[in-house]
Length: 175
Image (cartoon, rainbow, N blue to C red; front, side, top):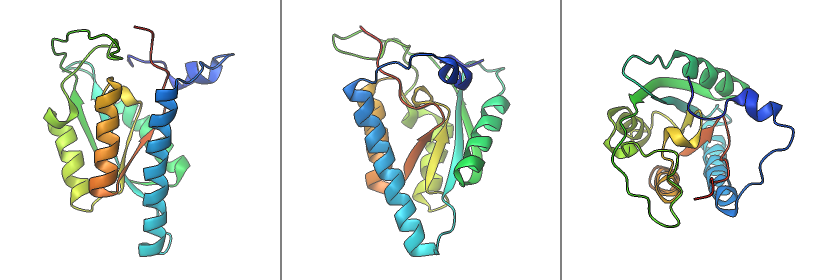
């Protein structure tokens, strides 16, 4: 089970939520790094498809990431990506303090850099085995806007890699 809206919910919504300026900025940054990766891939490999890793954050030790991976694979095929390794972590909630202005109201899990599956994503990208990573939604990476931004920017600037979301950024819920 997903902890966020499903693709069907997004499609069936009669009135899409107004994107916040922050979610629009995050999406633009994410798309900028994807465009740069595609341009670089075209220059270096004559149009070979972008290679992505599938990553899922599951909600419990017994949870099966298979449904996520099937969706990630279908999205990758639809976008023309070449899908590589499938990696996942189990969400481990951490104690969080609500700070004014924080958008981390959906629950806070271990930061991605502390998750073994995500560290493997970064290792494979750093090694040149992938151009990016595909995830269901931004909450598989981080629910906090600043930390999520840092991950997108870090992958893009350090490794010239990108993040692809099946479900685009949602506006932050009011705090």
